[in-house]
Image 1 (cartoon, rainbow, N blue to C red):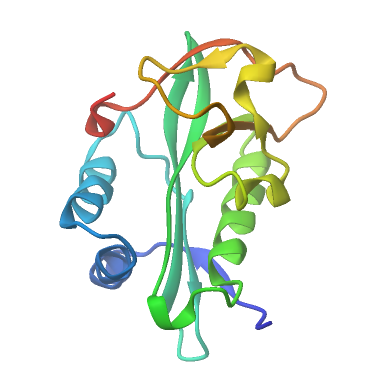
Image 2: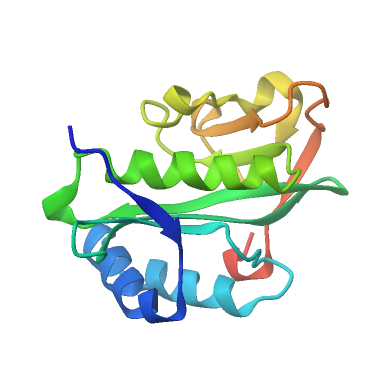
Length: 169
């Protein structure tokens, strides 16, 4: 498996990130969502949009952490994670996720929620959110909504996750 260098998104990366998301997901709405989150000052946190790059410094994988709330407690939401199809299963997505989580921890963040594939996210330490009293306003499979603490000395808040407006939830 390749070891992927990572770095925060730069303005020059925006077209490449859009291309990654458009290639990795079935509809352009996912790419539109990233653009909407980037434009939302309530959702966007500098440094928490991370790319994994190849040996030419071209982005091949992408992870984004945005602001959400668990009831009224600030938390983070991991969405999306995307990798160019030719680079999938190479570790590029995992590298971007790990770098984003490390940056969030360094910034003092402690709770991260993800609505995603239950076979992918537990390797990063995510566990079922329902075990911590966390839910959504929509019905989702219980094993798809997960939460992670970046600071075990602080309790994970409980309640309903409130996403940034661009998510429409």
